Length: 168
Image 1: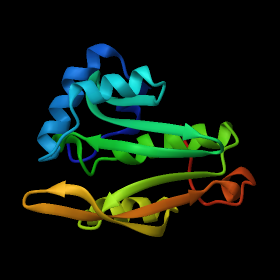
Image 2 (image 1 turned 30 degrees about the vertical axis):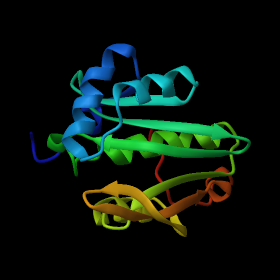
Image 3 (image 1 turned 180 degrees about the horizontal axis):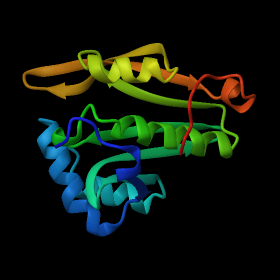
């Protein structure tokens, strides 16, 4: 993979059933306890917003988001190992922020492993703030790992007073 992916080489679109195989491959390459094909199909059937990011036509990552009342919750976001640290996750999250703002939602939530410093830095850089902790949230070999709860208030973005660059 090139050192830097260009935004023009990336595209976000709705997840289709034909994407289930590549996203489960990414999931299996990324986690010891991956989501199954059935979980992704159930998310699609439930009407969750499911998006993929493509690099030159190849699925590079995905994002699954549930919306309730005036909040959105990122349930799963993952980028394939060969596309990490290239802007794919940032683009997916910025896309979700833009959708949430346009839907007049008040906040966007997600959980992140306490050990996932790269993701924590990404979320903090996008304006998310830690608002809680879920004890023993994620399975790990031999036990469970805590998760931080992160939230992004969308009010400043709606008023145009945010420094967030929503270019999607």
